Length: 91
Image 1 (cartoon, rainbow, N blue to C red):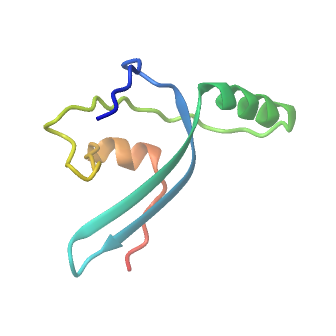
Image 2 (image 1 turned 180 degrees about the vertical axis):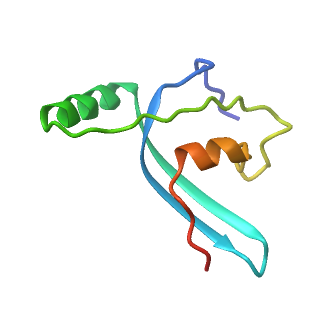
């Protein structure tokens, strides 16, 4: 098994969020696409140059064995989801 030495916090910017709620199966699927810190600085400079206003929302998630499944899924507090992610569409 390959092991990685990663910092405890990785600064990233969410660039795309795809979420689906299946009410029949009571399952929710969310995909987050993130850029690492180096690319975030480039994106921020481009947004500032184009005079676009943006709001910054953030939260910290600590990963451990109790909040991650063997499939790589993890849970996030509802308040963080409501504050940081767009509304979901039911399917």
